[in-house]
Length: 115
Length: 113
Image (cartoon, rainbow over all chains, first blue to last red; front, side):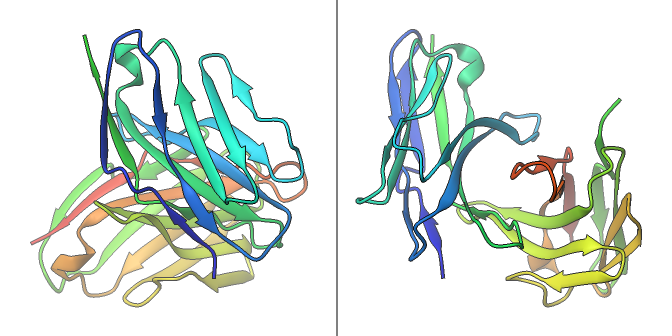
């Protein structure tokens, strides 16, 4: 069974600095999808970025980028120029290419941004 | 207008009560999912549905049941609520023909006393 692990329950960063959130996963599949979701205090689940395993190039969305290391089964999220609005819980999620479309989530990392 | 709505947003109930959480979507998606979120555990899948006649158990379905009344509506029931079902519950939808993305509702905070 696939698993996703986020080993950092909490992280903090100074405003305008860079922070990296870690995520590792376990799967026997070769093709799959990985996601980072943001959950602010409003509870809404917001998609931050996605990565397709067959693409070697790391995904980037404005200040958010990933470091996808397929062989190491690692998928970290880098937030550059951190802003107060980035404070939230961040979830890493895995989806295989099967027909179910199920997402498997990590435990979450709470990010605090200090002014 | 929200594409995926959940009612109620917050609910406090007592042990043994029957509770129904409702999810509606206007996205026209065929697939719907129910997840629960617990501190330190992330989100875990309870049930999912591919269409009105196709309901499937997720990894933590014990103590829950679901009903897909229409393509747009997917309800989650707790027949006899217990305190360890206190959690944040999310409904999500996806379009199997178009995208791998899931779209989440705003969540329901359920407290069982």
